[in-house]
Length: 204
Image 1 (tube, rainbow, N blue to C red):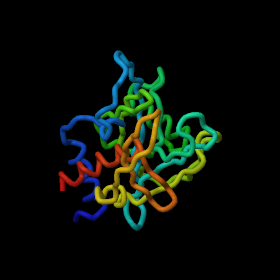
Image 2: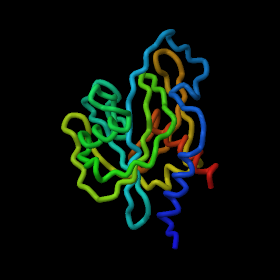
Image 3: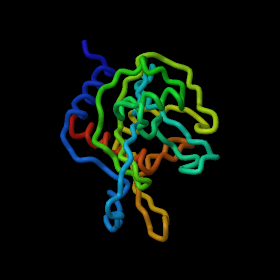
Image 4: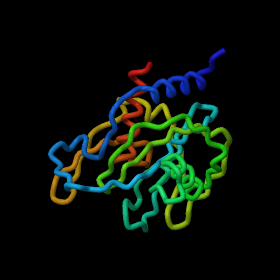
């Protein structure tokens, strides 16, 4: 018999199998002029889902407020692909182990979403993973202030998203947000999640 948990992951598998183009930090800002000949650096982030009695939860981090880039922002575990990483998937798993203490062998890789281009020059591959065992998060000192979870049903609902804006480098930049409690989820993280939510809605 199929359980609600199984049905969610069946739907996610269908959503991953959909064809489609990638996304970017510029989707809502069509007037953005990108520098010619720019070189994007590959990166991988983990959309890690862990099952709880009340349903699947998404694991996210709050970046350290002391970081030079994106201090205090909500992000997926992950980062740039190093020379020793054979793929963005490997980078996402390595970074998750370093940033939050997630053992790579507890993650069942379900697949990847199309790449997301960031305003900071990264080509990010979102990696969807089912965390098969509970673990005790260990935030990386100096990099991560907090590790927390959000009910996946919250970020899987397109109606939870809104578009907001702020001034950035002298121009008004628009972006997606999907706040949850005290956590202001926005920017690339929200854009990637919105893309997944849209896929889930189409595959229902």
